[in-house]
Image (cartoon, rainbow, N blue to C red; front, side):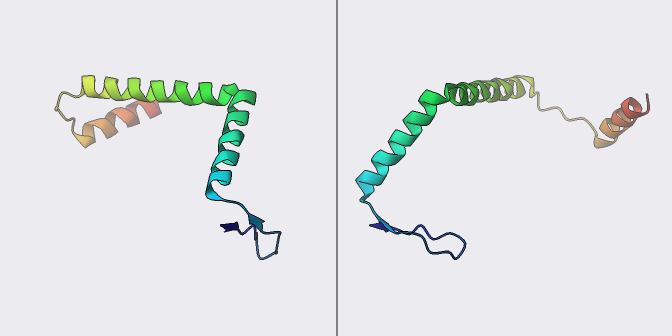
Length: 82
């Protein structure tokens, strides 16, 4: 399947590449990036763990009780003016 590399109306070279060749190219690029920039993977995993912990904390703290919106606004204004 030909890949069109046209960008912004300017014609560029076309590239004939099979789906499996494209898949291999993408895999190599990802592996290369993660090998050279392991900090990216570490950051992604750290963020995922923090998101899970936040979700668990929210579930644990969810009592089903709700606070009146006016009370929240009053408290927020008190903090801002202090």
